[in-house]
Image (tube, rainbow, N blue to C red; front, side, top):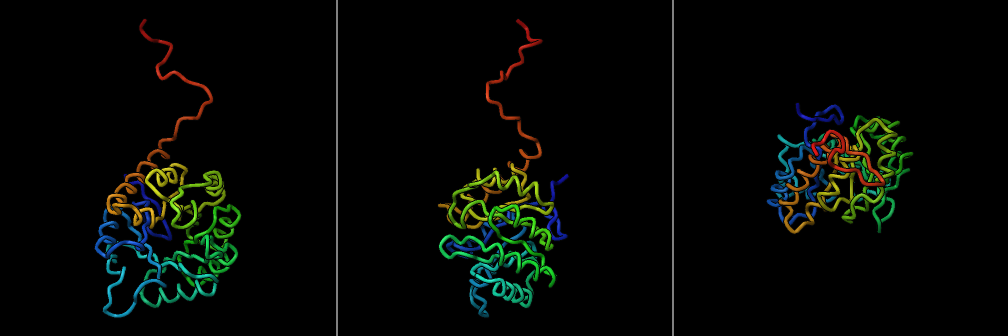
Length: 256
């Protein structure tokens, strides 16, 4: 049976969510999405050309096959983020929204307090909210309490490619909430994605890790395999770590 997971009442097979920014062309964007095997794609609504007849990253998204996840990138207040989500709804996009409320322009770290405030209001308006936050277990619990469908802690600053800097906090978040935990931001290569899934995260979201590679389409395929491998390793259960050596071959019952 397929190892599926549920997000906001929808069932997904792929545990990789991808972005649509920073690619060289719409054709490359489309090819990378296909190679990734993703079933959900995020789009920064404030950075999309919505002019009629003009090329747009939305042209790379097959709405018949993919769930569109508009995000509020570039918003610095709860009110601003809520306005963008309402615009997405008016444009006929899904009620799934990736909530970003940035607190610092240099690091792009989220403002957790504004994020919780915006999430509570959006949930009341019927949105399926996926909030981007720091790797703070207390904030994660607050977001679960207000009704978010998932929590999306960063692995490292957006676009940094540094990988998972604090796996211990992610492990605490995984113990603290019952909703899916999706690693968002900072993934740089396939091994980072595998680690996120090995920890028990439901999925990973990335953009620059794929789009910033020398060969984005090949990296998208690598990320797809890494997520699959990490999930299988989590389900298999890793061997315990030991301080000293343990012989691979049994010492009893062998032929001498």
